[in-house]
Length: 395
Image (tube, rainbow, N blue to C red):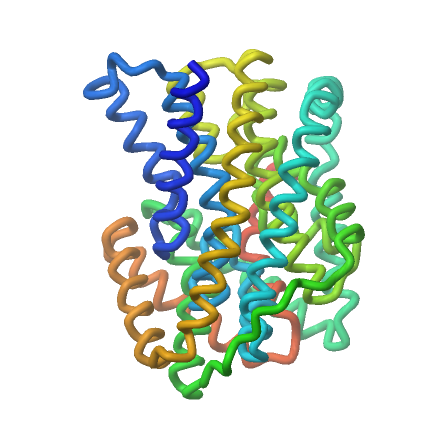
């Protein structure tokens, strides 16, 4: 049994590597395919191995996804915040360090997850309803603080509100995978087009060991991630915003924070399935579809898969990032950006259709405009925060 579990973990990491490095290919897609095949060609396969595969793939994807996010500016739904300080570090010749900061946050979060999972499961099962009732106030407070700390408060509020209106419009349209064109436009293609227009030249990249204080961002991640891991409508992006509000950090610390919160939110979605029988990520949905309820024994196995896949992914991330850093200056970055932009457009057309492509265009131009304003680009996360706040207040 142990050999089969380890094989499932390794295959999961391999698939997570592919989904992580290819922009637009998400683990939710692979999970949905596996669920549909489980009644066919996987009918005689022990569902335990499929579940371990999904959990391992999800964790690996979360590590590897930062490589294209930072080096190419192509965000996934949970890494869109990383390209903001990460892309800046890339232009300063510190792209390797930027990715590795997220990896250090991620591997730290793996071990933190092992410690807090069962105590948190017991606690959340007792106070879940109470947290749900006050979540709107938490999000409103966090949003207010993020706007208030800006020098140009009205401009920040404008970006936040307009992004929120855009998010509301998109999420209320009948389009498949609405977040794909929305977030790709705001945080990905807008930056790619800006890079192409300005003919950005990527300098020679330094291979230096990351240096920053891990404690402050990890504290923020540990405090904020459980809210997003157990409550609906919230993911790693919102968790990072809350965590940075709780524990203010500079750019390097913020990358650690994003890496940690993404791993914690993903891992805690498995704990949520055990504690309150609720799904909070696509990977958790796939696991529930395959096996239903999660026992404490199964949760232990899932946490083991998280540990092994996390350790493997951490070292693979270091190896691959070093290769990216060494090769990026030898590539025509403008041509690479153009190719990536075309690839993302095709992905949006395939998974979100023509309407999704129109959303991509609208959100891209919106992102280009917001990028020109002198406020933090994280205010564009209003596209998710505003709909989430309205959900909690019952509107």
